[in-house]
Amino acid sequence: MDELLNEHEQGERVRSWLQSNALGLIGGIALGLGLIWGWAWWKQQQVNQRDAVATEYEQFTQTLATNPDQAGKLLTGKLAGTSYAAIGALELAKAQVDEGKEAAALATLQAAKTSDPMLAEVIRQRTAELLISAGKAEDAVRLLGKPTTPAALEVLGDAQAKLGKPAEAQASYRQALRTLEEGSPERQVVELKLADVGGSTNAS
Image (cartoon, rainbow, N blue to C red; front, side, top):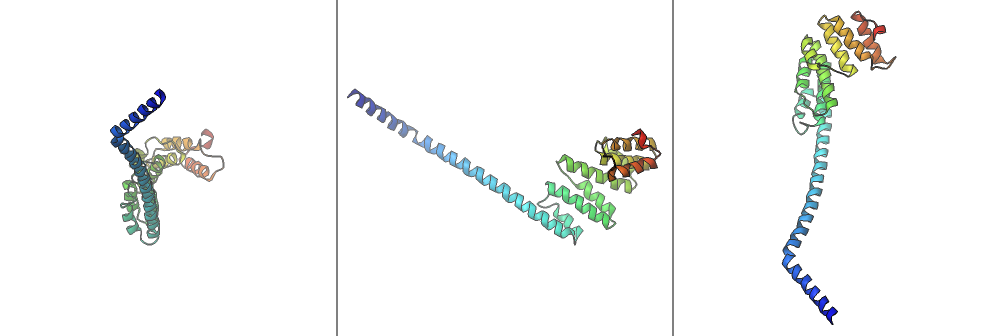
């Protein structure tokens, strides 16, 4: 009998607790379901946004082939602030150079923004090349700073050579050669540039 009473008491206590905490339980379940739904919605939004950006970039590449000026406007739309915009700026600048519009290409690259360090390095290098071509080798040297990649070191050497600083150009070319593979086309080009400024590959 005592055991039955205990079970009855326990049951009453459970019912009493459920009645007292029903709202809290329902709220907790609702909150949990809301969080699950919110997470799923956010993930879907991310997918939709990526799809929209990819579609916009595809439109950019198609427009670039026929109307580079119009293509440039697309970089400031949905693509703005994405890696697609930085890559698009590089492609647009190349198209502008091919059309003989180096000033426009320089403006395109100088306006390009990216948080990707590798893309930023490529943009900086291409910008420096255009600055050298525009007779602004000093600006190119300042922009490059102290590069470490062989491609950027080569461009730095080009700028220094333009400024009539063969010793500095030699140092930059030699530093580039240290990380370029023997016999590679890139290495051969740098070796030729080094020779042009009076340097010897034996000292690299």
